[in-house]
Length: 260
Image (cartoon, rainbow, N blue to C red):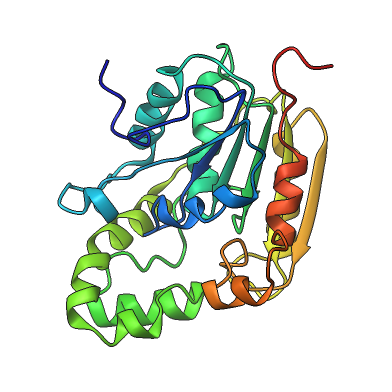
């Protein structure tokens, strides 16, 4: 059976739990794979492989968040059901929310939704869109708002040409995302943020409490918009210690099937 293209090409056959990861705008699966060494052995890490980046660089990125959510829900449902946790970073928080909504009446609904560096959706289109700016202005705006393009990439026309199409498409998806209010989700929500994230305020994170009929928690960690993925040299400096945000995420993992 051919695996859904949004899923990793290989997954452990003996996993008892799954951690589904939904990338930030312009991001891919690679950042999440750095988590592998910190996860319990029975957990399958399942980051979405989005077109337009990494090993799918030559493919056309998604232009519509609803279509991405439809396809991602189909991908999750293509797997045999296991207890699972959804983690969405920035754009990925909205995708994870929409996928959760599509899976509510199935055996694939996650035990909890974790959103990171992602303000709660309010409906309506962005009041200050940047997705249609020319390349130079777009790069400056993304760097200012999200601190999201490394200097090494900004200084290389070749690297910029590789990352800009997917990043621009993802930003446009965020800006055109017209959230339609529904009844609160029957699952818990945990909202995570960076203390120095100028693009996502604690107030916006706290608004996620209105999206759940279960429990809600909010936690802030040192760092900016990308606190969830510290630079490799910072991670190396921390030694074998599991990064604090990931430690909290691991604490939210559902119990394996058959355990009390």
